[in-house]
Length: 231
Image 1 (cartoon, rainbow, N blue to C red):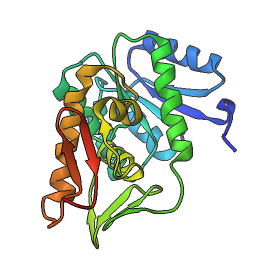
Image 2 (cartoon, rainbow, N blue to C red):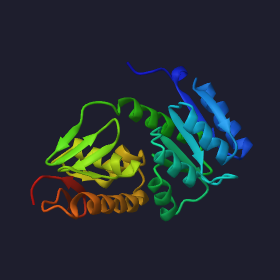
Image 3 (cartoon, one colour):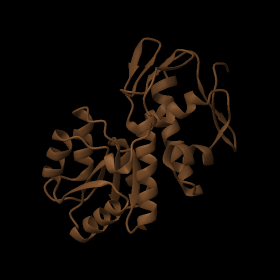
Image 4 (cartoon, one colour):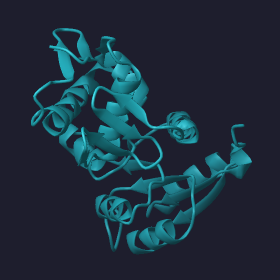
């Protein structure tokens, strides 16, 4: 049974107090429990020591920046979903944030409705991200720990690389368009996001296919990608 919003606790690490208050007020109106922190060091300590269902993390913070916090949380095996906030919107900046281990990315300024949609999507994905191992060919994925193996070799993936691979493995032998991938993995629908999808598919190929005799991730030119166990 899905948990109610009133059972879910969200940590907001944001140094702009007006923005933090805006987020806190809006989420509390939606019945979430919200804790706000205004500097990076305290944010890292709180996220590491206490249990949350979601973390909303600003990139530009005093004492410790959001990307450093994100890397440290994942190094400490804190797997809580993280939505990063930033004023930057270049592809390189988005990739840097996702590479640090965050699950999604939202640029300022944003409408609260968009933030809420991202929050709900991440919480929903986290609720259902439990269960038996997923297998395809000699790939093995553990949805609980997000560990991945090809044959018997463990492969280290970022949170977003894992999410992309899991979507491919759950939909094998199907052509997945860039729009489908954007909507299911990133919860985006706009076309400009496809550059980031291509970047992440290339990341996966290097880690999953480069040293393997049989390639699993294939391009369908002009359409998208397909996971299949044959050339």
